Amino acid sequence: MLLIHTPRLTNRLGYTLNVIFRHILHMDFSITTDAEHFGQYDGAKLSYGRQKVGEGLFVKSNGLLFRTSIEEQEPRCCQIDGQWILFPTHGRDIDLPFDIFSAAFFMVSRYEEYLPHREDMHRRFNATESLAFREGFLEEPVVEQWAMMLREKLAARYPDLALPDLSYRFVQTVDIDAAWSYLHKGFFRSTLGLFRDLLGRRDIVEVRRRIRVLLHREEDPFDTFDYIISSWQRVPDAYLLFFTLLADYDQYDKPVGHSNPYMRQLVQHLGDYAKMGIHPGYYSMENPKNVDIEEKRLEEILHRAIVRSRYHFLRLQLPLSYRILLHSGIRHDYTMGFADAPGFRAGISTEFPFYDLERDLETELMIHPFCVMDTTLQKYLRLTPGEALARYRTLIDSVRKVNGTFCCIVHNQNLCELYGWEGWRHTYEGMLAYAKP
Image (cartoon, rainbow, N blue to C red):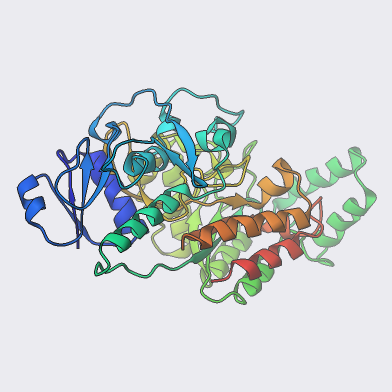
């Protein structure tokens, strides 16, 4: 077991050690503030502070983890031997050229999102506001890369130290914003849609498609669920999760009603194959009542407790949105990622616990970060299907190198091969084949 000495144990430091050693490296460790006990220990050990204590590895602190307040931070960022680092340190005794623990905490706590920043029209913290985007390492899981650097140092210094094997994982998540394009929306919405097509002089092919689907002479283009399930079943050891929107109908939330028998049947069918989660509506990120209502709707349909969530539109306000989920009994969230760019919002691909920076404590909510969404590649970056597949492969390669978790978002309606998504099934299938464990 690794013994870690620190002059003072804070919530921030304890949390960061937990993320690095337990969640990423799967290592056992213990912490001591007793320098004498540390000096007498004859196993693998590491000291963290301003000054080195005894033998063992030494990581020099810059002080961030010994504070409790939220202060303006402008971490110095640089590359050493091709590796991006934050909070570089100097000294003859150091074993790493930076404060790895402060760097990891800054990223995974989303410290910068608690500081003043600009938001987009949906009140989101965009990738362009992040340090990782500005410096050019957004598409690198730097926290895990740093953990691997530390692992290599420990292995070199303590060859007898048991270091667990690490393995790559693939998690495919599907957001159901609109289960059907035309079907099961009721007489009023269907009639209004048809008149909108006609009055708007939409492509006659589109008008005919709507009519054929409503007459059950053609499959609804958004109904790609059997295709998704059959494609997933060809990828062994991959995980599949669906997040379904059950909010009330409004400007940004346009689901089929939760009481609609066809919607209930679809959700139950998908629940037979995969894990299900709630997709809280556009206005739910600040409204605990909405999350409670939508969660109970899904629980009533599936007759099981719902513990997974991803906010619609990826709207996330820290720490409020995560406090709402905790209050509602949600224990796993999949919102951590950017809409406007692929990459690792928290610098990590592996799941980790949410740290409430304002309250200065680790919580029970596990954050499962994703690194790429289909809509980002097609609508934001305007990539062709071939270019998108190449981007998928680059991200998958970066995750494989650290034995992390490649988590992506796809939408059922984006696999319909219509409305600008022609050719994207080939991209999707190529991504599945490349990402398989």
